Structure formats: C-alpha cells, structure tokens
Image 1 (tube, one colour):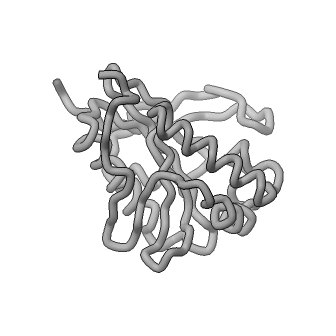
Image 2: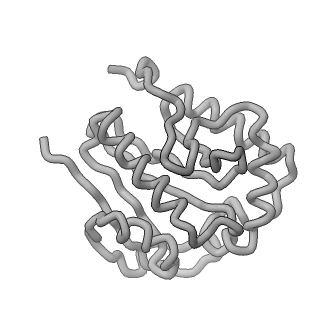
Length: 186
C-alpha cells in the first residue's frame, strides 16, 4: 500500500503524556521549549546551533505537518497532560517496505530526569509495532550522549553495535555511534 493512503491515529496517550502529530500553530510553544533547552541541545542537534525565532519554529512545524501528511516522516509532539510542550520525538528515516523506523527525541531541559522520554519512547515503539507492523525500530545515538543512550537501555533495546569514528557531527568532530534496535521476526 502506498504510505500516503495509510490512515492511523494522529495522537495517543501514556500515563502522563499526550503524544500527537504536529499542528499548524504549534510553533510558539515549541520555540519556548527550544530556547529554554538550546544549550543542552546544541552539542547533539544540528538544528539547535542558532536560536530560532517564533516564525522559524512555526515554519519548521508546518514542514513537519506536510511531511506527516505525506507519510515521509512522522514527527510527534510531546505534551504533558496539563498542556505543557515537553519535547519532540517521532518515527524517522522510514522504510515502508520493511517496515522500519528510527526513533529520535529531545526533551525540554526543565523536564529532564523524570522519566518522560522513556515513557514516550516506550509508547512510540509500541505504536510502530502495533499500528504499522514494524519489523525494526532503531535508536541511533552519539556515544558521548549518555542521557540519550540510557533511554533505549532502560527499555531493553539490544545494543547492536558501536560504530567507531562513524560520522562527523555538525561541529566537525568524528563521532562514535551506538545503534540499538528491536526487531520482530517475520
């Protein structure tokens, strides 16, 4: 089936979070969270090099909405149930033929250390397997970013490998990459 024809829920909940597709108008809330978290994000996220304006963030959201609708990339917004924008995640680098997905994520700095991202990634993993029949769900992290790779470890994703001097990061440094994945046999 052509991915653009796939219908599926655009939001779901966990105990503490609402996880949903991006919507036009989300830019202001996302911008506030990014600006609060810029220093923590900068080492790991190329898009965090420069502080975005509200307009930049809204443009980013609208592009994400378009890519979600065409099923090219399934960005998901994370909200606390009180409406606070908590961060971003989603199913990226999609190969619908397998189907295979990569989960990426970032969390607002003031909410770190409370288990929100582990909760979100657990739910998104289930969403990929249960809704799309995923055969493979990956989490790929910079080996220096321990907070990031602790998430798949807490969720018992097997570490498939450590790729030494794998890629240059957005600062030009060679990076080692940790690859975690869960699979489902045919």
